[in-house]
Image (tube, rainbow, N blue to C red):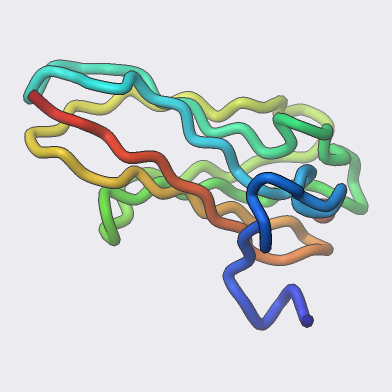
Length: 118
Ligand SMILES: [Fe+2]
């Protein structure tokens, strides 16, 4: 499998490889929020197994989508920026929050969480 020809996901979420643990973005948000009230979301790459953060190997950017609509993009500078990426949102309807991230050596990875809006 060529990591640069796909949007990558762990093949088996219960049994991730070390490569998957280092690259899969974990999206964390409250299980339930009130309509249009601000809440915090974090995206962490390498939550289970730290991803390198050095000049030759690093996470280049993190994007967050409301369903399939891009709502935030953060560019990261290696060695200076540390995970997680934090964002404050306010949303009116239940949705899937999806993160996409790119490693300069291992391509684009995706993770998501469902958000319930009351
Ligand atoms: Fe990587």
